Image (cartoon, rainbow, N blue to C red; front, top):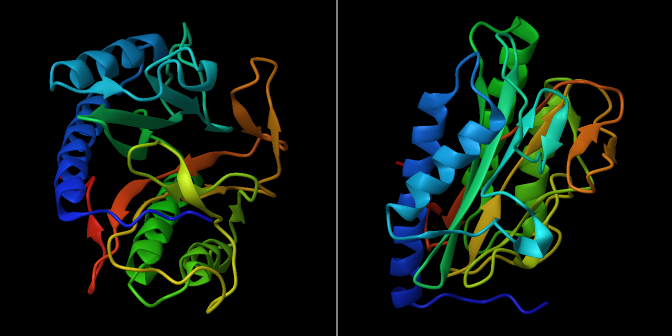
Length: 249
């Protein structure tokens, strides 16, 4: 496993990539409303990325056809934007990545479309809490399993399912670097974290079993039982103290 420790110069560029993608995330969050299409969100995302001097890292990545991922309700990740119109009561996950001067930033948020059910709101709240717990566990000297276990404990303690087939990842010059970061794990097991590692942590939780299937478009991942799913993500840097969140405004 070739985990890259970033230099001070590289971290500075990743901070800038993180700032850009966080601003894009906020612009998209504000734009979400009943009646907007997922394609309109994609167009806005690309516009916001490019006007900040960055490039959308998802567009063309392994053949992906859009600049952001837009996943609605039971869609977990990798939803392809199109003519779908968002309706009041939906929840929508917005996942976006940028490349700035050769370095990557990656972040995701799940947003309510108008008024949503208490169950959907709780799902979103717990998923956000699981990400916060993972970030708190991500410290130099800790193990990767501590981070994974923080997500699993938070989710299962709330009676929610944890998506097991997908997870976080290292990030730097490439969107996906080692290590893979599952959202389930055992404390004090796995890779030891070191200052200078940069990671994208991304809990994906669901109401129900969280078993998955991929649609015929070969990208969109949905819950097998049709249960709602939420997804939050930050890019972080491991330091000698608390992790630095590079994608926090």
